[in-house]
Image 1 (cartoon, rainbow, N blue to C red):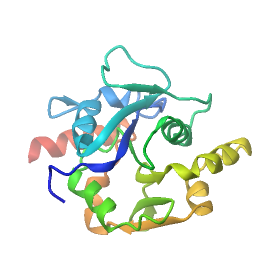
Image 2: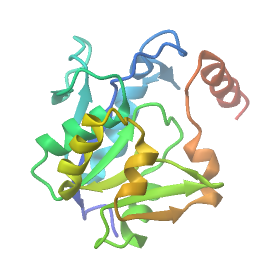
Image 3: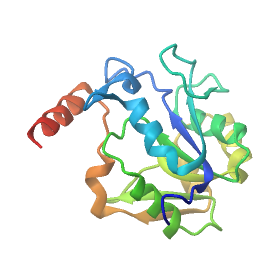
Length: 194
């Protein structure tokens, strides 16, 4: 796939977490002088459309924004809100705390995945990466049913639909997650030594 061919899907960047462990909004953290939200927005320029999804629109974000539709604190809310809003069959969901992600990896998930399934989700060292995957709009009702039973687990969702996992063990570094302030400090230290 060359850079001129956009992936025929809509990208949704999740910023909805409370960032309790991180201590401040992750989307506003800067790596190499660039906010995480801006890095992730640029990363998703390989899609036909892109939106940011969260609880409410921060004044400091000017990108097209969708508010979470349900009053629950879970990434499944972001996925539900994204699919409910989307006009695309396929939708890419990414959380804004993957500072080392590259668009070549996103393209490889799309290219190698089986598009007859309900979801294409990376697997790295036996860990699913549900907040960096593709979801088909057909699962919208199933997500709502699952939420109504108070099951907010993304792994529960992926087990209940036709999910194809894409092995990306060789790209473990790119899936480095910025969950805590210590994770962030570690990334900044690595960046200075490179």
